[in-house]
Length: 207
Image 1: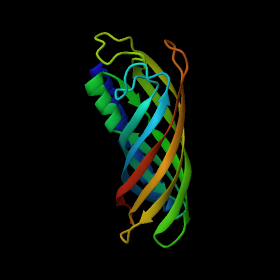
Image 2 (image 1 turned 90 degrees about the horizontal axis):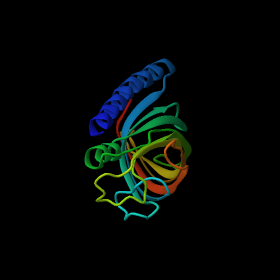
Image 3 (image 1 turned 60 degrees about the vertical axis):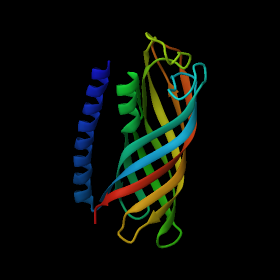
């Protein structure tokens, strides 16, 4: 199973390179600007379906954390669209726990400028939540847990503050509540509901 999950991750990362190429193409044709960055998120969730490796068996949910690669297209100083690719959680879960929790997401952001270098950022996100692994009732030391696949839409929203540097790069600090109904052929339908503090940090922005 670990090999198949690692193969999936490689396929996703290759798909990201294709997506970035398309982003650059759109950017060149429409005079938009592209930026690359890292998102760090930390929060908590209610989850009546999936095992949480940081919670005891029987607990519905627990803490959630991830590091994500982020690419954005900036149409102007007000509107942007982007794509968030989770990195830490899918790789950690695949290699250490033989599980998959993977939630890539497209985002739209509207920025209301408060001053020259500070803005209020709001916007929705829509992605897909994938799961393969045990349910929340499974003990951590279970040598042969029952695993199942589940998936569903991942819906979120961001409210935060953007801080612009003199070099043109930005930092966004905000709160992102999220909701994901999960569906499975081998398990009942489930619900994921939570919120996370999110920090976005540019490391490249097209001049």
